[in-house]
Image 1: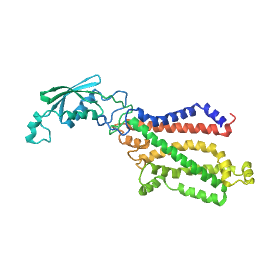
Image 2: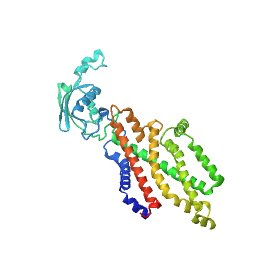
Image 3: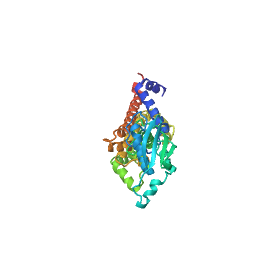
Image 4: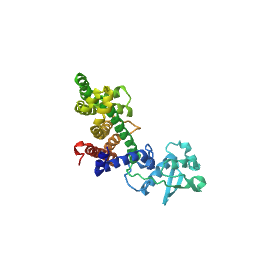
Length: 375
């Protein structure tokens, strides 16, 4: 293992891929707390905001946002002026709301503004708590100042006004979790099943591998749809569906390695000493298959992530409020013309992670290959 690590450390591409994957995992775990946005937080005034470093709301976004807030407050807004991070405006009563009765029109003209409606400003997430600077016309006109809340969306917002970067990082947790858990299930089941079939041989091997062939013949999408008929869709169902089929390749790989090991001298010596089948598998067979298995695991993780993304893209995967890279890519594909960054962001995370995993797998394959051990 020390020699393998030395060879792996010389492979700068594989080492860079390992560092990138560690950084990506940490970003998905810690990053959503540092972006300044909750993953499910909706900014209705900043829908489909393009990515960039500029702070929002910008000069052209303040007036429309205040107009929408004034409509909800049943007031009219005018004389909007921005000074630094403070906005100053004048709220005034309207002569007659659309839903007011004809006999009540006069009361709206003379009734002062209820100052409690100013709570709408901080609720919008664009403005801070408002303060009244001046009262005019007996309280029917209020000069109000409010601080601006500067928001930045490095990867833009989606169709509902949610931060794409935060959602991509949270989605990465789900995609990486599915890749890791499904790979662990495939590793445990596939290694145990393949090693047992290869070591027993004969009729037992034939029967066990025919079971594998029958499971291979079952289409994955059909299998997932069948599970959705009987069980509720969710993350657990996806883990079960992917884990139930991805161990098949691992079982075949380990069986082939076991068939080449079962007649080796150290296995025959263990049998002559009276070791049980479980002990031989645990001490001699499985440890000698770890090289190819390790490489297969690193290549299985991107396969599982891509498979989950495909199922989520079809609407059979992770469901709201949870999300994954595949689900975000499906949303971005539907909004490609109006908001292309919704597709570009999650796709960049997915593609870079898959490339890094494949490069890491190639590096581990070279490091663990006994044929190049002397190089």
